[in-house]
Each structure stands twice: as structure tokens, then as C-alpha cells.
Amino acid sequence: MSAADSPQTANAFTNDALGNDDATALADRIRRKDVSVAELTQAAINRLDKAEPLVHGVIAERYDQMLTAAAKLDKEKSLEDAPFFAGVPTFIKDNTDVAGMATRHGSAAVPAGHPVNKTSLFAQQMLAQGFLCLGKSTLPEFGFNASTEPLHDAPSRNPWNLAYSTGASSGGSAALVASGAVPIAHANDGGGSIRIPAACCGLVGLKPTRGRVIDNDAAKSLPINIVSDGVVTRSVRDTANFFHQAEQYFRNPKMQAMGKVEGPSSRPLKIGIVIDSINGHATDNVTRETVEATARLLEAQGHRIEPVPIPVKSSFPDDFAMYWGLLAFGMKLNGHKMTHPDFDKRRVDGLTEGMSRMFLRGAWRLPAILWRLRRARFDYAKAMKGFDAVLTPVLGHTTPKLGHLSPEVPFEMLFDRLTRYANFTPLANVTGAPALSLPMAQTPENLPVSVQIMGRHGDERTLLEIAYALEADNPWPLLCDRA
Image (cartoon, rainbow, N blue to C red; front, side, top):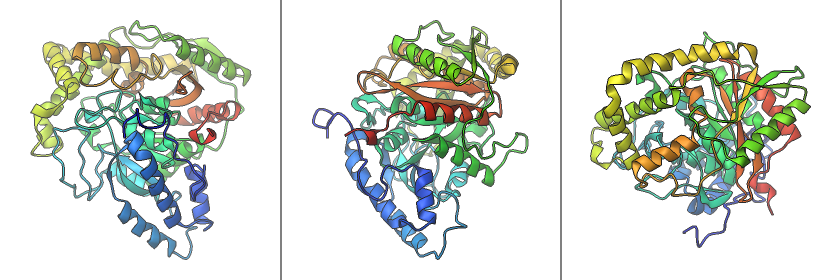
């Protein structure tokens, strides 16, 4: 169904077993046997049948297998000792291996029809919480773009307004959660790919501190590990509970435990504010006003807000662009080792090809670039000594229409658009710091506008406490709130 033939939104919420509940509420109902897992699974499948033709967030499904798994769970006499999210339906992003399913990384260069034999270590950490994985969610090619518009497939559409982008690269997961099809879904973030789709689709998205969860398979081979895994959710408590449960499976001994975060703190904080990006592109008025309004709300809650200089060198945007280009070059060169032996580099899209060429033109600068990017962590930590958190936009401007960031756009134009749009999120990836996206306003086109809250290394707790307080004082709309 085309966007022209479809309703403006994709609202799958209905009066079924899932209701309007978040994942935490569903997990509690399952434990109390107030609802069967089979009922919830079937309700999710029914919602997917309704939403998926509109949003296109699913690249592969295994509904029958999960219905069987649900029936098995329902036969258990008690679920009191089961994993916290036992029976809650979810999706895993299609750059992460799940045994029995193919992993195509959003690219036509990766051949279809080749299921993997092993589940990746992070997916094991996630599924150990009891989730039922209904399938794989969409992403742009190799997660490089900031909009989920793979060249060889239909774009993922924003449930709030189907003419607009879901963001990326976890755009399929965000579309499925925002539409109401599932309450929580996997996302990962190498330059903003948890926070950007969360911002576009009105969700909570926490990029954790580097090393907080088990490293993604791709992260292990990177000169600088910029990739972190997590989830997109509709409530702060779902995000907090997910990371608390992940910590029960694996806790990094080099990092202070996050623990269970259940609400806001009463302690006053010193919060920095940054509104314009280091790359010289001014933030648009709607986004600027949203950040300023959030700052006023934080002040009303008793916090102190002060401007803070961006704690990295002026070369950072160009350095990160070259590092992103290195990843594209590496994928073209080693895709047959990293994805599948039949990887066809001739089928990569214009963004991957353009970034690879951009890197080759400046490859001689790589040693200095890597040195400066590695130093950014220490510069950031030094700047954060006087602050508990920093408030920024997530994005340089509001969510664009589909096509604006399509890989069919000529590379130079597309890359310029990306630098104007995704210009606040990469800092947390390079430094390894935690950063959280929260929806705080809406545009006249009914699209969410979000803010980013960045924290000190290992201090996700403070970010979640701030988020709980903002959620209580400024509850964001969900599609289920619409008639």
C-alpha cells in the first residue's frame, strides 16, 4: 500500500490483550497469569498485520515459531521465577545474528536466504530476559544512513506521519514500537542509531556507556569501538528495567553497576546546555525552542542550567566523517568476511560507495584522525567534571520527509544533508559516554521533537532519573492517545 493510499498515521493500538501497556506492565500481567503469552503473541501478530503494510519495519518474521514458544510458556505452572520480560514480544535489528534467521544488514550486497547458525552474544543477553523475538527489523544499508530507506526495498515510514522518515539506523524497530505493534525492540547505535529513530518516532532511546552491555559482534573489529546496543521503548521504566535485567546477565566489572532505577531523584543537579552544533550549522527554531523549554522545566524542578562549551576540538566533525568513511571502505573491502562469502560490493548503495571514496581521498590522514578521536574521551570527561549532565538537541532539525536522505540523492548533497541533521549524536559514540533521547514536543505535522541528555561515563542512572522526572511533568503523547 502506498503512502498516498494509506491513512496519514499507522496506529495499531486497539482493545486487545496488549492494550496500551508498556513492556513492564505486560511482563507483570504475564507473571500473574492475568493474560496468556499466546494471547499477547497473537495480538502482536494481528497488530503487525495492520501496521506493517504501512510502516514496513519488518524484514523477516517467525510468527509461527513464537506462537509455539508462547504455548510452551503458558504450560508452565508458575512464571514467578521466569526472566523478567518472559513472554513479551519484540524484534531484533537485522544487523545482529539470531540463529535460524538470515542477517542482511539492510543491503542488497548481502545475499538473501542464508540463515546463521549462532545467536550473537548481545542478542543472547537480550533474549535471556525472556523476550519472544518475532523477527528482524529493518535498517538502512549497514546502518550508515540517518533514515531507513534501503535502496533495494521500501522505506520504513514514520507511524506519526507516513510521509516522513523513521530516522535510522534502528528505524524499523522504532516504527514497530511507536505504532503499537510491539512495546519494545532492539536497537544499536554507532553514530546516533538508537537516539535518532527514538527522536523521530517519539520514543525513549538510551545509548549506554561503552562496555555497559556485551559488545556487538561488529564492534570488536573497530579501531575505536563506537557501537552500543540497547532498545527503543515507549516508557522510561521499560528502558531502565531492560538495562537492569541486562546487568543480571552480564556486568562489566570495570564499571559501577547501574542498578535498578525506579524513579526521579530529589537531588539538584548542574546541567549544561548546548543548542548549536560544533560543525557550524544552526539548529532549527522548533528544535531550539524544544531544548529551551526543556531547560526551563528542568530549572523548575530545581536544577541549575548553565551553557557549556562543546568539549572537543573543532576538527571533530571532519574526523568523525572520515572515520565513518573508513567503516564504509572496510565493509566494501571485507564484506565477504564480515557478512557472507557471496557479498557483492558492486551492489552497495550510493552512500556506502561515496563514503568509501571520500575516505580513500584522505586516508593518509587516518593516524592523526584516530589519535584525536581517541583523545576526545578524555576531553569529554574533563569537561563533565563540573556537570552532572548536558542537555542538547538530538538532531539539528526536525524529522525530514522520506527522500530527503535517500541513498539515491547525489552523494555530496546527501552527505551535506546528513551533517546538518545528525550533528549532535556522534560525540557520545566516540567518547563512549551515555546519552538519552526523550520526546518533549511535537511539530504541526504531528511529528515528535526530542532532546538529548548526555552524562558522565558510567552514569546512566542520573540520565534515567532526569528522564523519569521529565516524563512525570511533561508526559509525551503516544499514538494510542489519538482517537
